[in-house]
Each structure stands twice: as structure tokens, then as C-alpha cells.
Image (cartoon, rainbow, N blue to C red; front, side, top):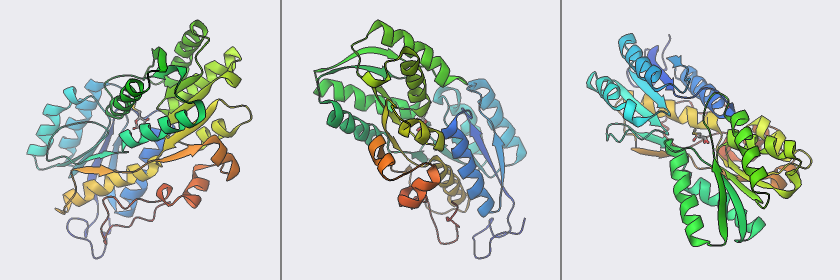
Length: 325
Ligand code: SR1
């Protein structure tokens, strides 16, 4: 560890230990988030210990205890179930370890919360739904309660239905696991078969959207369906822009940027510098039409065209290198 010249302690010496503890590691979003966190950690000469997530609350608790025992200076907690984390997170704070939370409401004024402005994300997606479909249609909705970003997006969906009585939610399903897309596809097949009048699917997580698209293709109904999602990856762009795809829009950040912001927030906390309690990375609407028209094929193409996909001004400081992608 060489340290960063001009950085405050302890970053001037380098090798600061930080743990990234995820609840979910499978899927494009979480892999890109981790890659962004790793790139930012490397640029800060942080010794990042990555604890992979397997949707196991007991294991995530255990990992937090392991990180405390490793003597880390900071912990980034990426998703998780707040009810199973509160006491172990408090143990970390009591030992002087700085904690940053991404997409998990730990409701502790000592912990900065990173999020992707989920209300705005869902609103942008639903505005596009209305542009394409009006306000009289039968819908399916993909949701699993208990995940902070999905719960925030759900608040917007509930209000949308309340404000638009012509929108009828005929089916609701969802699953978050290490096989989210394929399990969601099975559920979507059953729901879409039972409700052939569904024309719009709000699936605000890319693994959900991928599952619904699989189901629509298997059932041969892709031309009658429009899917609106959150998140983007190179694989998603391919699925959205391919000929005849029912996946017509998504609203997304670059998850690698969100991962980098999470590490920067932890670094600022460790250096004793000011960090807002609420750190937001704003998402962008990406329609099938706009992606095709701009010839966007990869997340790197997006980063080249849309500044928010290559960097964020959240949690920055002059001593923190932020040109990572
Ligand atoms: C199970 S929660 C999945 C969501 O977490 C992140 O906020 C991503 O945007 C993804 O949609």
C-alpha cells in the first residue's frame, strides 16, 4: 500500500480496510455494482474485502461480524433485510467502524444511505407507460416486498393506480433468488396465460423484466405486450433493442457508478469529512426507440453519450480520484 499523496489520514498511508457486504451478488446489476466499488477502492488504495451475497440474512449478519473481526475501518452494506442487521451494524458503529448503506434502510443517523432516486425512477417509467399506452389498460406488476428500492418504486405504482382508475392490475407476482429471471418467467407464464388481456407489464428490476420477456416469447405474445423496467446492462441493451422485443423502456443508473459512490461515501466517513445522510444517484429514461436510434449496444456506449453513466458528483472530494470508467 502506497497511499494517496495529498489525501487525509488514513488514506495518505494506503491499505485502509473496507468491507463490501452484499445481500445479492447474482445478476448484472449487482456484478456491475461490485465492479464499480472495486475500481473506486483500487483508485483509493483501499484494501477492499468483498463478501458475496446469497440472499441469506443469517449469512449477511455473520459476514458483518467477520468484517468487524478483520479490523475494517468501514463497511458498505449493499441491500439486505433491516430487521436482521440492526444489532450487528450497531456493534460495528460502537467499535468506531463507519457504515454506509446502499438500498437498505438501516434508519440510523450515523449511516449515510445511497439510493437511485427510486421514486423518480418509477415515475419516469410510468410516464413512458402513459405516453405509449394511455391510462386505460390491463397490467401485470412484478414486485417483492421488503427490498427498499422495490418498496419505494411500489409507492409510486400504488399512487399511479390510484390516480388512473382505468389502469387495472390483473396480476402480481415476483421472486428474488439466485434464479430471479427464470423463476419470474415461470410465474409470468401462468399470469399471462390466465389473463390474456394484459398489455402492459411494470417490472421495475431488470431480472424481473428479463423473466417476463422470456415468458412472452415462450407464449408467442411478445407483439401484444410492452414491458417497462428499471436497471440496464449490456445484456439488457441487447434484449431491449433486438427485433420484436417487448421490453420497450427502462430507467437506470450505471450500477458501477453507484458502487463507486458507495465506496467514496465510506472513504469520506473514514476520513472524518462531511457526507450527506441521503446520497442520490439519479436515473435516466432509456427507451427502445432512443437506444436503437443512437446505435447504443453496450453500457460503455451509454457512458460515452450520457455523462451520468460515466461519473456522478455524489460523495466526491478533491483528493478522491473519480475518473474510473
Ligand atoms: C431486489 S432489489 C433489486 C434492485 O436493487 C437495485 O436498486 C437495482 O436497481 C434493482 O432493481
